[in-house]
Length: 173
Image (cartoon, rainbow, N blue to C red; front, side, top):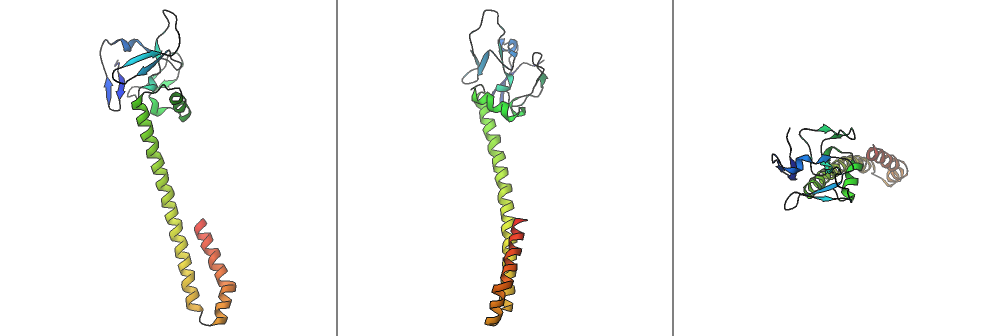
């Protein structure tokens, strides 16, 4: 078995015989990890002597190379990045996640937002190009056919409506 704790975005503390290896994982832990200057643990509530010392491993680990099933809850423990969004939000709102996990979470969210915006922009550009193509085709048609005032009046009354409706159907679909 390997006992390590992620203490930075790209660093694990792996110290054989370290006391933290005896801390259990628990969904409702008794301790909160802090990976600031050094690895420290703080009590989340008052405890009786002999109480189980535990922390939620998902609050320090972004992704676990060796996930496991928690013996107490039966839940798979595999790192913060694998949790459902509601669970991620809960742990963050309770102040339980460490700074490097928060940083990785924010970067992941920004990447997802950027990808979503790129998709929206690409769709808009395609719709805009189709609308312009439809409008310019209608415009050429009007210019070619509108040689007299009577023809222009006819186009204004009939042809422009059909061009406008075909432009709308192109832009919407």
